[in-house]
Amino acid sequence: MPDDQPAGGVPIELNKVTKVFPGGGAPAVQELDLNIPAGEIVVLLGPSGCGKTTTMRMINRLIEPSSGDILIGGQNSRDIDPDRLRRHIGYVIQQAGLFPHMTVAANIGQVPKMLGWDKQRISERVDELLTLVGMEPATFRDSYPRRLSGGQQQRVGVARALAADPPVLLMDEPFGALDPITRERLQDELLHLQDDLAKTIVFVTHDVDEALKIGDHIAIMQRPGHIVQYARPAEILTNPASDYVEQFLGAGSSMRLLRLTKVGDIELDQVVHTSEGTDAEELRQEIERDGRGYALITDGMRRPLRWINQADLEERSGPIGATGDRVTGAIGHRMTLQDALEALLNADTDVVPVVGRRQAYAGALSLATVQNAIASIKSRERERRLRRGEAQ
Image (cartoon, rainbow, N blue to C red; front, side, top):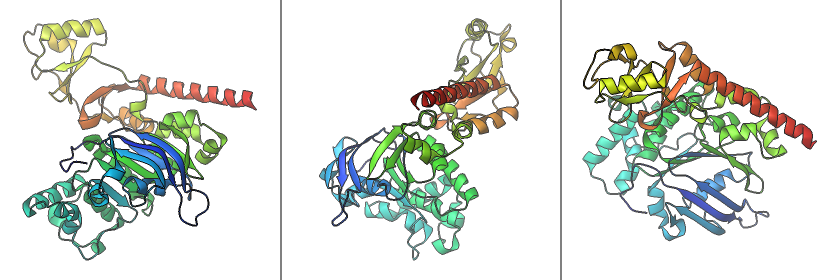
């Protein structure tokens, strides 16, 4: 694993990984196969004792596998020095695990210091990360962990894990000890950070709602340490692989679908979108062919800037430039349908752009789009109930 890691994530592959502890009887993890795509959040979900944390800790070799292979970015972890491996894998645990005798800045800068970064670079990185996790550097860099709230400590823990810009982040029940409001806020912040950073994140939890909210994919585990279903949240809710999965999810899956299905998982509108350099007459003709009567103007990174309609382009020639009305809000692709519906009801326009990673345009959302998605969800639920009835 090279020392100059890119900002984005790398794939992780577990092949027939088994862990047997001495005197432990049955394997804690048994011939586990798992492919984790680069830049995704994959949640290991299951009850206590199913091997979630053991699996995670084998990725950074805090626990050595008894057999099988773990590939990180295509390289076998057995071929990487364990200390060097861990310095390039961020690790966040419950209750942060900060060093109480060190300041916030010293905690965050610990791994960069071990990697030989100079003081100026470390200081700049500390301030950058504190700002990234919503903590004012001037206020918090010289504080000690005991003076921080639980939520603030977890933010510092995330900042520390990101300090050396690792491609992989391991998170072991990181928000489990927090109150519900703080926990939900930090989940939202994690998703926002991930849109910008695109790390490969392995997240352990036993909380179903947390898994459904943050996971791009979820691996549901069962004793003795194997995966019974690995899929996107919406698929797990609409098509659980077994009675065990359905029982573990519990009642209310239909409501969860509305509350936890992400905007990025439904079919979005694709409105005409273009740049400020587009010729006005060409855009007017394209809008006319599309039939909606409007288009979205984006910048060089495809971030939404303005809405423009056909009337704005009448008798105009040359590049469209700054013509149009400023976009006043966007919906994140990780936002739930429930939250997206609320955003639409409060929006100034009937259609709101949806943005993905780095705030790039990914599609558009209207009330009709949400209604169609809800109808599709209901249809899948009816089909699932019919299949289960026929199987009984």
